[in-house]
Length: 139
Image (cartoon, rainbow, N blue to C red; front, side, top):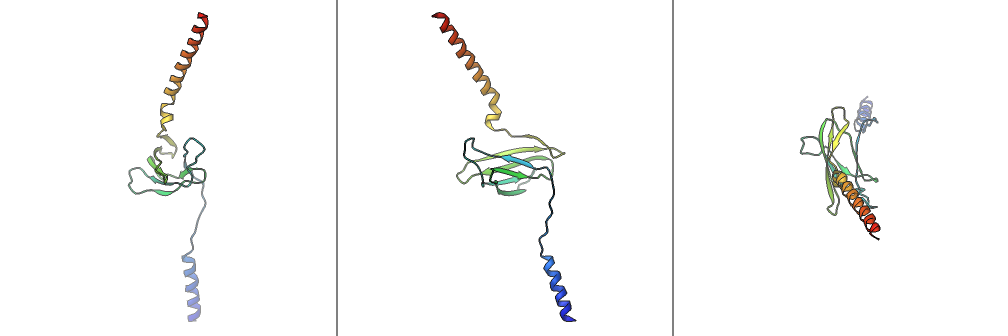
């Protein structure tokens, strides 16, 4: 009888150390990083901070496609820090709404000033175009 109890307790202890899992489908925030050229930002370390927290919500490395993916558990402004081993990095703030939709995020310098660049390029193109016709009429 003692052997049966011992075997039963041993069998129960085997299941208590089993790592369980479940697969669910949820909305995730996906950030893609690149240097704008063919150089990727894959397998670089990152930290994700929940709103108002000092301890990271998630840490890891970007995936093969240079992405950081996380599933927020609350609304607010989330901070994502990525940094490569050679010192290049970025801090991105993502505002997540109550419905877990992305409301806004911190833009890159190009995105911030894109309209200004396009405006200056158009003014420059118009100036060149006018100069071409003025010079052509003078001949």
